[in-house]
Length: 239
Image (cartoon, rainbow, N blue to C red; front, top):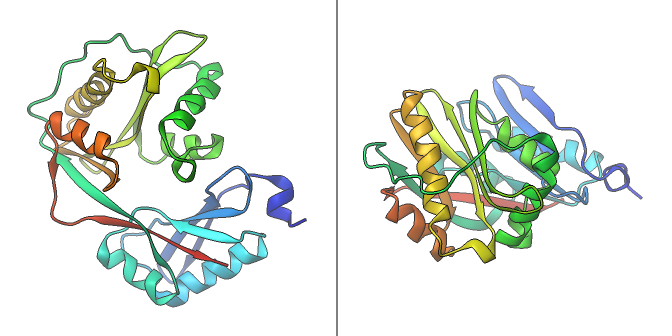
């Protein structure tokens, strides 16, 4: 058994060479799929991406996926043998017409995080579901973070994670339990995190979602988000 598979989720690692920098982590809890995310302002070269792939092979991963990338950011990965796994729609909000919050939300205590992951597993297809490490990554992705949930201690109905960095707000993650859909909870979660971004001085908010996720696209548009002409891509390749 490989080291990554035997340990499950491995510790994240940052690689830096000549100003190029990327973060390597587990994408799923089985330790087989890796997540490669650029963390520098400049796009990564194919040579640097290849060096990251060698490190991931040595750690026992068999597949690697990227974070959501622009066309410019994707170039080095495509040269290194990646293919498009998913096309994403990128949307922006001016933080002026923010939907109301019609549900009582609260900041989760740490013991509720397994219930957060349970909601996430029901809300997303297997490929997109978070494990504990993925939740930690979402909460640590930006300098400031907003994490709110709705529901009881025995079962949560939904949650949202928002972040702010460099004057821009980001809706990092949003999930609603299938049994709680159609009750306006998604709008409340979006409204809460947008108001927080507004209070924190963000100039705009960004969110991305799968082009095939009609429900999420409709929700964000109903909350005042506008689709931007440039989309994003998640790329993947085997190791």
